[in-house]
Image 1 (cartoon, rainbow, N blue to C red):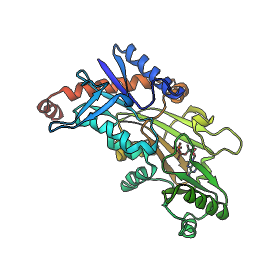
Image 2 (cartoon, rainbow, N blue to C red):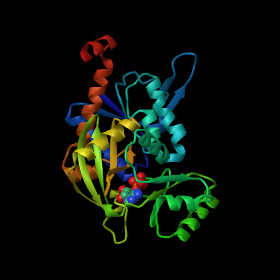
Image 3 (spheres, rainbow, N blue to C red):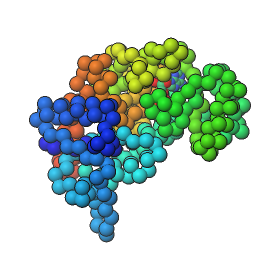
Length: 317
Ligand code: ADP
């Protein structure tokens, strides 16, 4: 089977992370007797006429597409237009992993918070504000310093900082607002007891494929991201942690996700639900064939989408 993968990188300028992820997927596809075909977002055209919306790739209708794996490796300021490409594939009737709406929710930390808290999934105490006017109330609500300040769109730990004092928080927030206008940003309780560690849970379909603990290593660093030099090791998870991870992907609507969980005094709390989790770190840390599981899932999804609706209903019975 041909498995298509959509990337937002430029073919001439693939980042090492994207290159490695695509190589792992390609190898896994070949090992399972399939072929991975890369689609670059820059080659996609969205076509609207009086008929069903179409997607063209390099000006051609994709006749042989059975399933599309989306690697949503774009930045937040492109979210509207780039996620529309995913939706267009869906509207053209192609099974897509992860779907448009789930990607939109996952790529915006504010929308992730809304989706999680709607289903009462535990998260660190968080405020989102667009001005410094009510800063004192927010500080009172959080209760103690340090606090964590985040942009809505950061990833790989960029756009996440720790602020030690009220004076520091006010000056940074005012500087951010004067630099970029009244954009929303996040002020969050600092979970000190996590001690610079979190758990990255990799879920494919409805299965936890692997879980690793990420540990900040540099002195004074509280962020455990792999790309910031965080150390990784296999994590074993409690039932409660697994339940929270499953609930989080269900809330956001992702098929394939990396859920980041902080271990706190009051139980596991979800920090982030990543729609485009990197494959290399977790493959190395756990020895699991993550790319292989993704390919298997894509194949299953493609095959299921071919089963006529009546047969699917019979199966469910
Ligand atoms: P990103 O999406 O950029 O990775 P995160 O919100 O996941 O941003 O934060 C990056 C890292 O910072 C996390 O993996 C975690 O180690 C640390 N961190 C983030 N928020 C908190 C918090 N509220 N308390 C303690 N550590 C945190």
